[in-house]
Image (cartoon, rainbow, N blue to C red; front, side):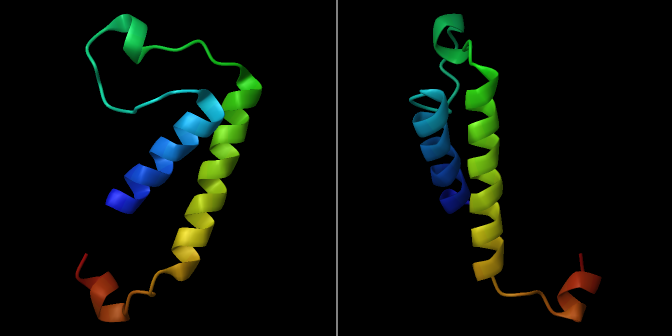
Amino acid sequence: MTTINSILAEIARRHLSIETLETRNADSLDFYDTAVWCVRDALEAAFKAGAVLGASMTKPTESEIANT
């Protein structure tokens, strides 16, 4: 999960100019005005990162799937 969190944090920094995804309990730090094209770029980056990460993971066996 740490990998996913660090990927999301990097996408937020790079595409949305958000320095952290941690809640800081201050409206000026926790809410942002963001252009829709920045949101689209961030979503596209997250989708691509998920595809790459998913392709690199081992596939679950049938018994692992059955146990979930």
